[in-house]
Image 1 (cartoon, helix red, strand yellow):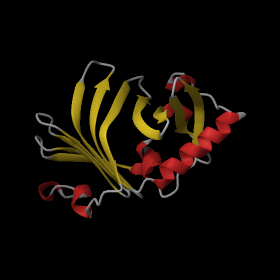
Image 2 (cartoon, rainbow, N blue to C red):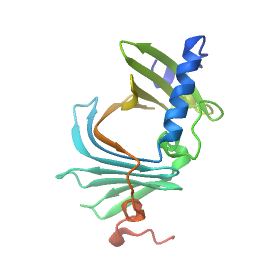
Image 3 (cartoon, rainbow, N blue to C red):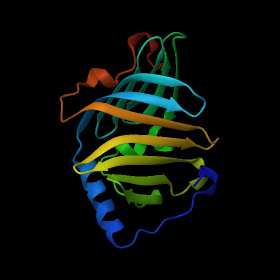
Image 4 (cartoon, helix red, strand yellow):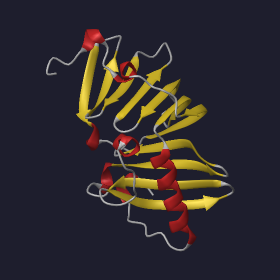
Amino acid sequence: LSAAGAQAFTPAGSDTVWIKRIEDYLNAITTLRARFLQAASNGDIAKGMFFMRRPGRLRIQYDPPSPVLILADGHRLIYVDKELESLNMVPIEDTLAAFLVRPHIDFKGDVAITGFSHAAGTLRVTLTHAREANGGQLTLVFDDNPLRLRLWVVNDAQGTETRVALSDTEFGAALGDELFETPANLKDPAR
């Protein structure tokens, strides 16, 4: 389904068991550190490090030469361009990234499942904001044995697809506050 054509999905039978397992798995993740490979539908490729500490924190640190750094500080998603020495912020709840860092993850309420599949050892669950189905979709892709987050795909409202594959994934590592802080030379004057 495209973001524009997202429709509610009602899981049935064994799908509900798998969806509950995925919720339990995601809720058990306190921290995650991994290398990533990002591929966009326009052909752009990027690599870097992904850090997440629930609730509320994430860091997407692109390898050079990219000057981009993306942070979540618990309230906002912050896009940093170190080359331009600029930052842009949006409330994290306005983004699909909020789903991964919320205190409790479930597939109901403000999140709607628009698709689910389980085939060839792979699980896929596609989500959208329940109140704004045309705002984009997030598809989480898992290996099923053992259950493990492998990648996610973001389809934004403009139809751009971005795939982020994880490797060298480490769970439960200590991730300090400094990882999730805005660089000192770009501090938000409002804070």
